[in-house]
Length: 192
Image (cartoon, rainbow, N blue to C red; front, side):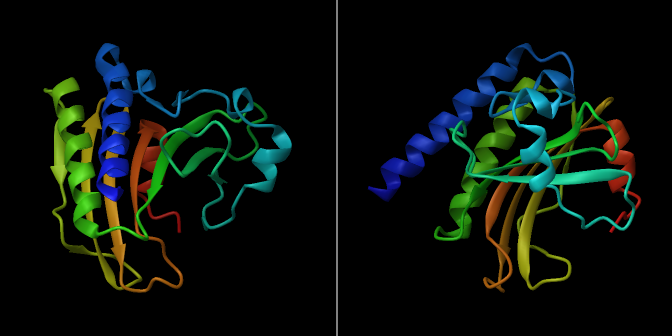
């Protein structure tokens, strides 16, 4: 039964990425039907955005928002985004879909990551991909992760698997992140 659910989930994820075949730039990609640089107000109320906002950046240029298990989610368990602090339109400069892998084996996450990565490679054959490997050490917590990042002229797409030793404070998960160049510049300058 578990194999059937995983197989169906993989098919749903792959078919969701098929909509990317017409993508001319990173803003054409979607996660749960949401595109980069959309206004979050198209999908969430201002009250929901504010109540789900977090404060973990030392540099307050961007505000992180974490959404859990909303009713319109079909594929991902969580949807996170970042907007410029003070932007009344809540334009999303980074979006991420997250699948909880806490009760699954790490190799299942890696297999799904590989399928998603191959699909992106097929859709973006001339895009540079950086492979951080399948057993890199996580920072700040014991565990391993795999990261594949596609660099484009206008941002990046990253597919990651995380397998933490400390299950109390961390959730094993797969994430797919799409971010524009401005957010990429922000995140590479250690805003934590």
